Amino acid sequence: MKLQSIEASRSCIMVIDPQVRLMKAVAMAETVVKNTCLLLNCARVLRVPVVASTQYKKGLGPIVDEISALLENAWTFDKMEFNCFSNQSFQKILGEIPGCVDTLILTGVEAHICVFQTAVAAMNNRFRVWVATDAISSRVQENQAAAISLMNVNGIFCASTETIVYQLLKRADTPEFKEMLKHLK
Image (cartoon, rainbow, N blue to C red; front, side):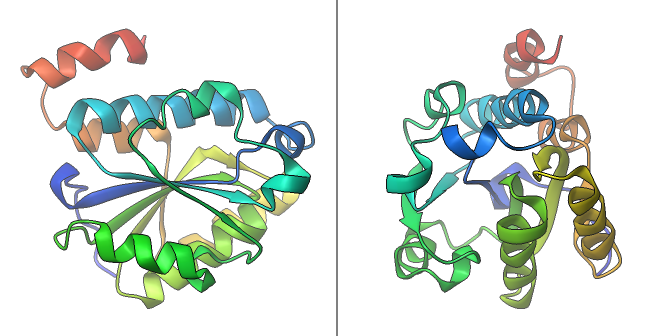
């Protein structure tokens, strides 16, 4: 797939399973939370739709507070499937997301399981897929690195959170950029 710029008006951010019990076990959890929050603040400023999932919420608990606080207008669903596209609730949400959305920006855990499977399914469903590499993780960092490598060579775009945020913002002379500055410092 040809590399193209990310357009806010055509994007949706997906936050995959950053749950209390799971985040205690993943590497670099604090970084994942910080960068996911940065993306969610950008989504709020630019009015980018957000979808958030939990994996077996009863067992792994709710989404961590810092992220949960930024999901006020997000679509949320609980799943047992690793791949979000295999979940019926997510399929219904896809029908509610504006039709112009053709780009999914993924964050969350675990990189080599739910993030990877969802990224592949998104691509197979004709979405352009961007993964915020410093907003995903796994219990074992080698699994995260392997997932990023595998996604990268198969047409899924992998970039840092800041790279994605600045692509969404486009310019420094806008009120949206000025509002984001406090989150980018």
